[in-house]
Image (cartoon, rainbow, N blue to C red; front, side, top):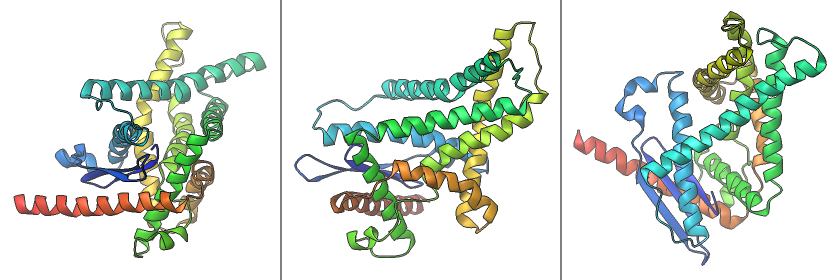
Length: 303
């Protein structure tokens, strides 16, 4: 967020932004998750896909709101069609960067090296995965050079500190939050990195079972492979989400090892925040807890 923090709970969605005059602007909405309407989506492996969609949807809403409040922009909120188009554009960019380009680059490396790097080869998916992670890391490093993004990363650290304070059962004060680390195992950065890493293993297992050639057309064959990769991102996201949940719940060395790269990555996406930034994060957490309590009370009353 721009000069702000977004918090999500099962039934509520809160954004708190520091305005140019120093005051805090709060947006607290009731959030109706698809999982609330269709309980089947709460099942393991399915819920991770929904969480990924919700994070993107809420993130764009929150970014728009924070830009208007923090920068003093006087614009209308994004309508359903504009929001849908923005999400589609974001997904298209992600597919291009993390599916299409790595796949074509790996094919190109095979040609340049004079090696047959077909999708049935383990090395194809290892190289493909390395390229994906490299693009992701390079992107984070490059944007971290921007002053405004460094402040965004400070707010990211403030968000994690506030969550740690709540999970420890401590009073939600700046003094208590400041003592906690900027890293958190359930961070979205860890989730994205785990998705990229897990895709290497799943593609290695599945692609040898796919047809080696479609109608004798190499271009058509690779388009088919890319489509399969896109479709497999849903079960990959589902599995990655479950790994993060298990790693946060159980002290298992294997799970901790899987989550460790995500924690390392957070050293790039978080910075030590200032006290006024921690204050914003704590206010977002307080409003979220309050709204969630009111939403639960409303549901009980309706029942």
